[in-house]
Length: 160
Image 1 (cartoon, rainbow, N blue to C red):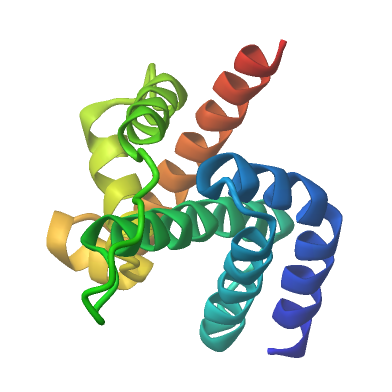
Image 2 (cartoon, one colour):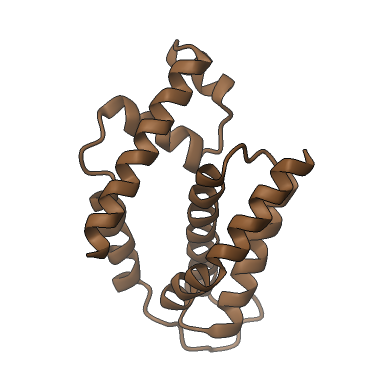
């Protein structure tokens, strides 16, 4: 378990500036972005199930994205005390995120998309995914590995 913590922490420290940039672009506020980074790290540290550096990086980005989206959704619903506070426009960023997700997932098979969604969005464990899909745990791992590899390749293409 301590090895996982080291992998997660090392990956977080290595990606911190990139993660901060992503959060600022989404949230448009430096303090909110810093809070989102902290929330992201703490959420992953609590589960503490990262097996590799690649997995840690993928989880950090996915969880950060979800944390930022949750923060943006809370802004859209407005303050609970009834005060009138101007809401920032969220729609352009939501469209950009959706478009980016679509581009990153280009070339994935329907099965890979289903497994990726179960693992990253629904935060299911490999054994749960295996039971639901009727696959072996090793087949799920293999598909996730290939999915992550394809997403990394797509990301490299987008970053050119």
